[in-house]
Image (tube, rainbow, N blue to C red; front, side):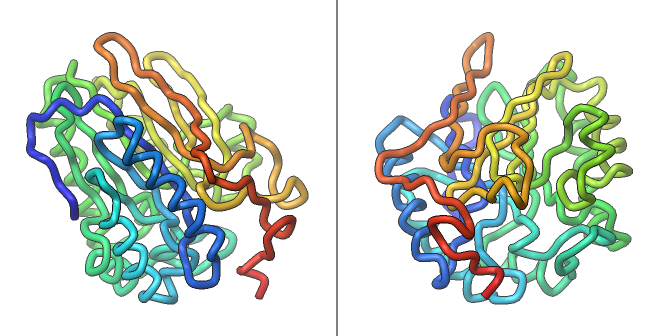
Length: 282
């Protein structure tokens, strides 16, 4: 994994999600190349990938290895957390392959740790494996213990930015009516929200929904990164934010965090089943 020295002040992050890279999605690779060019030329200091790096790494480990090669071609350091298409979904959701120890090990071999902490200088970036939430496994229990230790080791006023694949927050009515696979599972959401209490967590970064959205609650902004590949048609998914392909630029200032949707030159706006075929229906 590309790295950088601890203590370096990192100010500009480029947040990417849902790239769905695969030999079956050449248009995803083209859009990824546009993101990579942007990262090389706009002052980005760290690329953060929020999962669904691959189209189907959960069943095709070679996709993870191929995606790792593309990550390593970036001109700047990177970190990544897994998504449901990379290692499987949370236990008990309404559809999809469940996360397993073997799939998790495949991610760790090809990409690296599924959870991590990075010192940005004045803040800490913590990446979590959202796919383990709700699992009754040793890996899931270890992640909770690790997160508690990470938060407990830092002063309460030191900013912590969380990065995970699935969104954590939305209006209560939306959470209640959403399909089970869209958000962090309810029990884990309550536990994670409780752990953040008493700590300064100004930003929570997530992907998964293929839409750009920001949601504010007291002292915290939830940022949904869009897909770099393709959006879902309105017939398959409601409009919750902005259905645009792109990435998110995050600027860490002295007094504020600035968040912007960015659409790199050369990145095409694609819709699954519209101007590209649906590879999951093949």
